[in-house]
Length: 135
Image 1 (cartoon, rainbow, N blue to C red):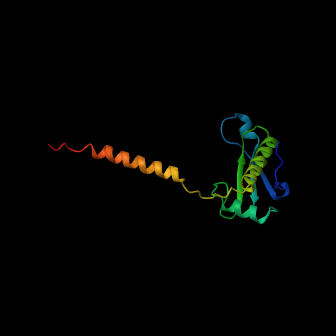
Image 2: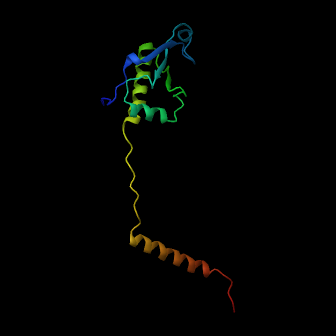
Image 3: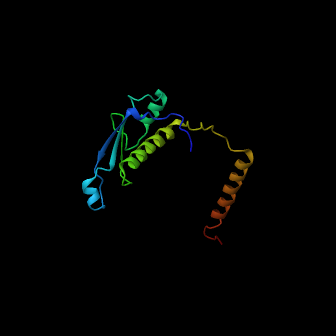
């Protein structure tokens, strides 16, 4: 297991138990096993640069107010759904923790430029030969 570089503090996360959707018989109607997770990015203890990158994400789980909202209902147990929601939140934070590599623009080599121009000239000759034959 990879240790997260910026762990999310569980005290900053709000969990709400709600009823799951879908099939499941009587269990779905009686038990509130799904978890609704809310995490305020601006009020968190994450470093400011991580907060900015999270807020800049165009993710449908992040509201305009900067609150991450996730729903976990894959498991029958409330505890497993809670762990699943927390794991997914940590994955979201970890995804912005790694800086993307800076792209350094490269220039084409002289050989590749020469090959490109030769192929263009050859192609032009082929196309020029397609014209009507003049007698």
